[in-house]
Length: 373
Image 1 (cartoon, rainbow, N blue to C red):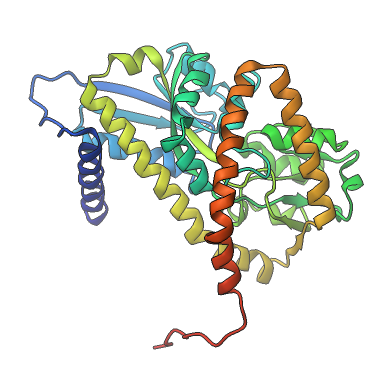
Image 2 (image 1 turned 135 degrees about the vertical axis):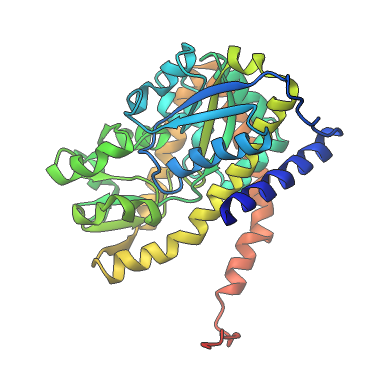
């Protein structure tokens, strides 16, 4: 009962915020108004922390905000369709809605991977600012229209970890011959460094690492990696996640189904996604450090930083890879130019705000301590 009350409070607050932006209020549904029953397929294991639960939360908020006029049944990866067939199911209209990450669809539309994360690109909040205030949403809709779908940011992992490795990574040459699970633009960079890239959905990663069919993997960060038990099959845990500094998760909707929704339900879906986008990010921020402590202190994981030489080498390769992709695909060029333009602005502001504050907070001075009572 407490959770349902909380959800209603969240729904009311989100709807109120949406009305303030839109300049109108949602009409109270009449008994005769049309109701919609949708299905959502995801690329995540059912109820997987942060990812699968984020999709479930989205469906729950939409149901409560719409007072049942739009109800959504959520299916985890493999329950209705395999993880990487989710976009096909939504595009064809077999189901109305999906939840995943944009780089999974780079084989369909190359530009989609830029929407997930750009190596050495933007943090989660910078990414969200680009979507909301710098034309990112419009560009994403243009990309997803190529797949017959409507796009919404629907969660963010924050800065990820660099990955799990069974060998030490001392130089850039250590990527040569390495078989690694890593998607999106990060995967293209690892290829350029001489690695072999394998793209696997989340549920297939633990057995692949355990059986030795891959030498290394990245997934998300400590909260999710602990849940998958990746520490059982790899010794070294590297940081930072240069390849995914703020990874956007997505809610994609069949365009015909989206266009059939009345305006008030479209607004509910939009603002429900905004609520979930922030909630999922907050969950990762809240859970990651405790999970990291468990990995290191209870499971003996060796936490290692990538050297500056490795990071500089990867950064140079990332620029080459992205320029090559953009030179061969006008839509990728349009999206990349917009992202890099906003990245310059965000980086300049961060230098005198977050980065400067992080330095100040880390200085050696006596600070208040919490009571132990």
